[in-house]
Image (tube, rainbow, N blue to C red; front, side, top):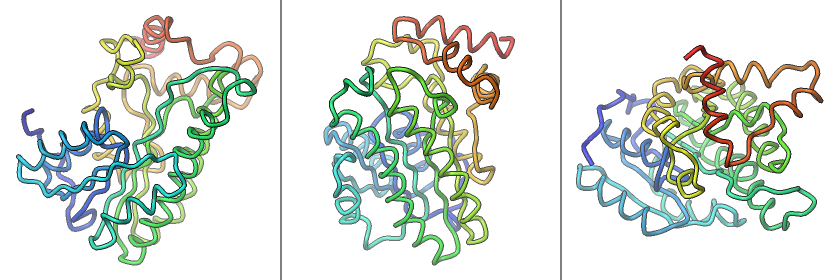
Length: 279
């Protein structure tokens, strides 16, 4: 894997360590590669130890100092587990990229452990990690936080009630956190992504050739960390879709007409989103 072109992140403001939650593949891995190119030290956290260590070795080979923690973010002790590898270092940048969804179904029929994991990772996880690391940044008067979000945060979608609800929390939470942290010297950004070509999407059989490359998403997040509270990734159709589904009028009609498409219709949905932008 070649070294990526640096973004030019300010080590003085956001360094020397970056903590990437969900940092073993996809967008999280690209965040790590870009930050390594900018000479950050890295702490990578994900559930699967194998891909985590593979990426860590790749980045160490490029001269980065890297620590890893294999942690199930759905468990109540996730923050305590991560703190074991961060309490002796200065984390100036928190990127919380975890929160994908691989199970669809009616909320009242899905097992509690399925919907509970979605809420634990995206709601409680973002809140608990930002409270701990954000407080340390505020005490130093500098730092940055990027919270991964989704266009699904603008619309409650059938068979994805917990997921879309959790993403809505993340977006509104980020806006409030941004307003609170700006006077404290800490930048907060909610990175709102659309259809992205991640390994998780590929494993679900999604047509990732039509999706945004993960490096583009990660680079836009880092380049716009000071442009919060929300940055919608510039994939054609993303901004237009957010406007379409985010209005306050006719919510019943909007929810019925614009629900997230089933997986077998993802390709057609992606093309329709792009048409919104005239591409």
